[in-house]
Every structure is written in C-alpha cells, then in structure tokens.
Length: 263
Image (cartoon, rainbow, N blue to C red):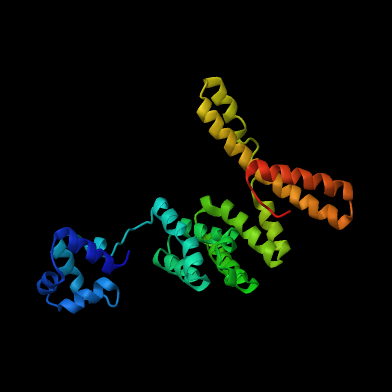
C-alpha cells in the first residue's frame, strides 16, 4: 500500500476533508489531492505532522513493517498472474520487481516470485507467449533463487534448488540442473503415506478422504510426469508397444486427476 492510499483511508476514518487536512499541515488542497492519487508524495518534513494529525506512527503512515508476514507475501504474489493476464508481460515483470525492491529482505517473497516461473506462461496473454519473454522471466527467477542460495535462510534452500533445477533444465544448462537435483534430500518416509491409515483407524472419514486426495494428487502428478517422459523416450526409440501402453495410461491418469498435458 502506498502512502497516498494510506492517507485516503486515514482521512476517511477520521471523517475530515482534503481541505481540513491541508489546512492542518500547512499545504494546499490540490497538494493533498495529488498525494492521494499518487501523483506526488508529501515532503519528508511533513511526515511527522501528518502522522500526529491522524494519531498514528510514521511507520504506519508509510505502511512499514520490519518483516513481511508469509500470509501477506502469499496474497501479494497471488495477484501477479492476474496482472500478466490483464495488463501484459511488461506490467507483470514490473510488479514482480517492485515487490522485491519493497521487501528486499524477504527470502520467502523472492522464492514465491521465482516460483511463478513454473506456471507463468499459463497466464501470459497470447501475444506475450514468446521464447524471449519466457527466457527473460527465467533469468529473473534464477537471479532471485541464486540470491537465496548464496546467503539466504537455509529453510528455503530445498525449494529454491528444485525451482532452479527446473529453470536450468529449460535454459539448456543440464549440468547445473543435475547438480541441484542431486543435492535435494530424499525423505526416507513420507508422513502422508501413513496418515490416511491413521485417519481410518480413528474413524475420521472426512480427514482420511482429504489426506488421500492430497496423496493421490501429489504422486499421481509425479506418475503422470514420468509417464509423459517415458512416452517421449519410447517414441524416439520407436518402441511402439511402450508408446501405446504409456499413452493409454497417461490418458487414464489425466482423466482421474483432471489434468491436461496434451500428450
């Protein structure tokens, strides 16, 4: 939220006009109007008087927080695909960059913005779906991911390496992609493999169904990706029996999971 929007909200909460605010802090009514429409910002020397007038801190006036909550980061990033669809590629990229500049210390935000690369093309307008734009987004995502991996919080490294591996694969840097993939941990036991059974023992049928759907979707998606890869490989090797079997299995999985790979 910019300072103009904050001033509008505070003024309305206080029930005062632009003219009353202007008179209180010693500026003209048009000056207040320009603040609220984003055409200009208050002089730094006016921040304290404006904050006192509304009974808030300067931090509140500037919408400053020491750390960006994860929930807020999720909300902000969730808006970006709509910007790509509505306003175009350039506007979407500018919004990504603006968020990262506004919260440069948020490793989680950088991870979420970089993660958009895996689905961003789905939200590009038809005229924006070019290799050049995809490469540009990929390079930007890799910059953010490498920042995280070079000195960010270690709790984000696994996800960052997974997304980076995807980016490097698609850019043709296969050795770098393989290096990151081999560094990813392999869990010995996935809790979700046992949770459905636990729910059944408890008689918690709704939870058992919910967890089972999550497990089927996760591993079904992995199986579908593997099937598509097998299909492509078998096609290149002219192994037609495998092509036929993999094609039928892929179609069945797509129908079960509601996915469309175009296989």
